[in-house]
Image (cartoon, rainbow, N blue to C red; front, side):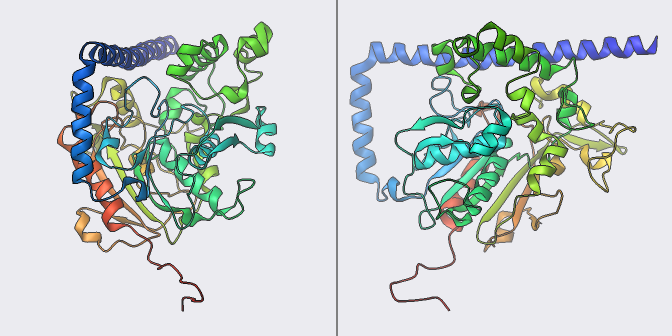
Length: 464
């Protein structure tokens, strides 16, 4: 009888979670469409007035500007899971318009569900230009094409050690930046033997997924291996929806939003009905090979990733860890009801009560459940501060930004912010003043406080 009740509760929770996620996805999509329609109508009716106004603004801007934006090192905003870059979902901004706060900001569109490895490769070619090369060994192991999207013109083709970049990543985007930096250090890009870790001057993390999250287990990943999925779960519904979406291959729809699995060739033209059935049965595709984002976000997957990632001595690192929980009489509970997005409230509650299955080996030596209870509805706060597993990287907790000046490279400076996981993206109004405070401090730091200490070497000179 108890088992029946538990099963009924689990199915109810799955139903509610599915409806909430579908409604939020529909809200985002419809908001983007409404924004595009509104812009099109404005351009149609007020085209001449808009052109005159834009011309005046450009003239004012040119007369007041003393700095050429093209001479500034770009700040690259890297989106997280289910995210999108500039050019997707119409005029909707994943970073809620934060990119407008600086003259030189890039917002790449990477695979929203592809693995962190694949996204790091895509990010490199987005910046340098050329055809995305996922690597022969990796592509063969995962069963997808070695080559992907072609960037005729890179967004920053001069990128090198003398022209380094600032990366700002939200959620999984922060880990993507770290993996890319390690690839640069390892000279992992064919035809680019001169890459080094010093191509990156700083990495800033907003709710970064450094050490995994217990949410993956609630969504359906098996805690036994951190890779396979439960037969009935939210991720299974997501998997089926993504496969059908890609297989239908509706051009205008995929141009509007793309999960990023084009290199798997999951289309009706290339695999037919038999291929679709094969993918749905779990015998082929990214979900069969494990080459997608969720296994990278488990504690086990993050341990495996982090075992190869370094914190480099000449790079500046910053992290904003978020939480929406508090302790009442020793019990961790959600810190707010109205202040937590409906998409995340159930998960905040579940994650604050997480218990690792007693019959399953803990993910690492010294693991304790209570260290993972503080969370923001998507990630555990302990995971977001700085890389901790399997080896803890140098870090410093920051209360006031002025206390850590002058900044030192090779150290993860981190702050704890009272916020849920999506407060600083998509909907600017939700964050209010906090939105401007966070992004203003990030851009100011990149422009005024972070720089290479080593001066450029003049001809016939060496540094001593």
